[in-house]
Length: 180
Image (tube, rainbow, N blue to C red; front, side, top):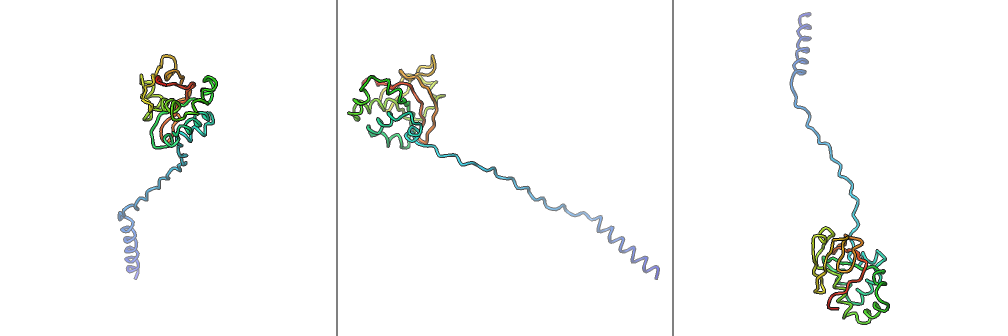
């Protein structure tokens, strides 16, 4: 009987040892989830016209653009590069000039406005490598980078105001096309 107990005990010990010595596959690795960074929604870019409206310093330009029937164009697909004179630039014109231009919006006013617009999006880095830019008016703007950046007779005072349909470069003078 003692032998039977001893034999039974040995079988139990052997079974435990055999079970403990078997190799089992490691548990399948569960991939650690990678958190997706929270993205802050980027506000939608506005059109050239909307951007100029929001700036608050282009009311004369916007009045002229509207009078000339160019609001839809500058709100359209583009892309366009606009050299935008500020209200101060328009105020520097001889007295009565803006009123005279607004009286005939489809004539000289349209030519002057289109002389400030180029087809395509030209950032400042592009502009400074160019000698000239063709305008929607049909004439060519001359670029001078010898002392800052000048476009024809106007200094570029703010660059690269990006819009959904192009870019605005703010200038300190109203440019008059050669034929005007």
